[in-house]
Length: 341
Image (cartoon, rainbow, N blue to C red):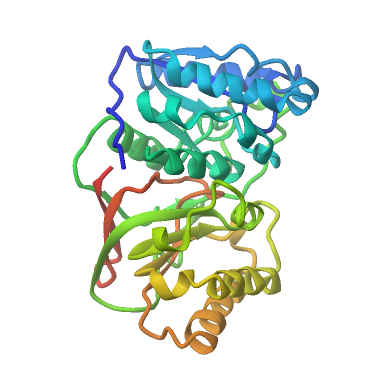
């Protein structure tokens, strides 16, 4: 895995819309402007939008090739040091035919996103470049009122070059919803809740280590069997990280998805699993039971470590996890340590 150079203040970064084009819609463009302002003022970056990123939902949906061209152009441009996703969506799959893996491999740089961006993370993994599962412009960088301190901490530590980043549970979280179309509420803080669970160890003890691979569970189901899906040997000794989206799949759907990973032989090869905080803590206990049923009972993997309720993906606030990055998990201390990131 190629580890990209870290960002520094003054670097130019690009915004891409690889799935949903809402960042260019008139009712949401104010959130793009807010996210751009935060990238510039809070992190000292110079921000540009790629040519098609702000053309709106209809155009972006109808032109997957143009989305891919934006991504390839951003990688080829030597002046651009990082690429940030506007938002997730549901059809990043349609950019796959237009990807040039050599362009990515020969021009390594920071790339970050989550949710449907799982597709692009797997594309970059296939190209041999480590990327990051983390904040997007319209959501986390344009957070109402101000960015969460927890999110900012891990942006600074992970993307700007601290060694051995230690990730711990956030002390608070939110699922409060504020209408994104109402720009008068840009300064209204979402209501926070105290974290009552923290990280939970569903099974396993001690310290495990390995490279990370995973993403949004529903999106992973879409890419199984495609050209970007990692072959079975790639899963050897990996730590699988998975989370569920705002769609809040039912516990049965999670069971089916986990059984699919078992049937593929992946669960037999990995060293552990990290599970994201369920959106809004919906199905919080039911998801735990789903993992216990499939991994512990059906698969007999009673000692396979599972760390549950980690703040990444569709969780606010969130940390950042590196695709292909080498990490340690101390199950006794309930911490994650990013070593190669």
